[in-house]
Length: 195
Image 1 (cartoon, rainbow, N blue to C red):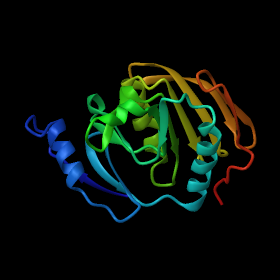
Image 2: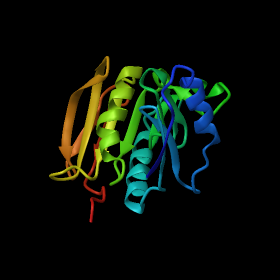
Image 3: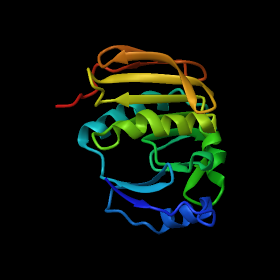
Image 4: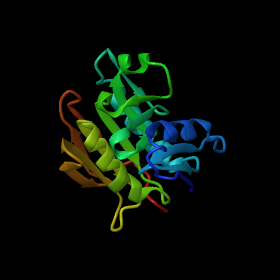
């Protein structure tokens, strides 16, 4: 992952970060994000990462309300944390995408899924979790392939300020339940772990 730092002088505020983000071109398939005021470029996800994203997308598709959509490349902005993230999956009302641009406000998301990679695991666990909580995203599902002991899936909810409550945490191979409005049990037995 590479990073471009932006001088944190008052005149280099959120609008400057957004402009830099919009002008940054990463290699094809990579993600360009703003994490704690730093524009970062992450490599394209590995095959195991994409396989997990697809399994989750397939499971979620049948339970979404008609007016909601699921997106893999939409940005989620959290200006109060100087962040603009590209989650692996975002569930949000379709109306949130009616505004022009490449991102939606974090407050518009109903569920965000991040799947860790070796280069971004700490950001997904700490910086992005705090950003999504600050934005008021009701549910954050962290699929931590690179957890220290064993791959895990953690469902966070009840955001307050920059902190979530852990609603459920399981190891790969166990079930995790998403509450209403999803009311869905996700099987993790076929999630590929780190090799």
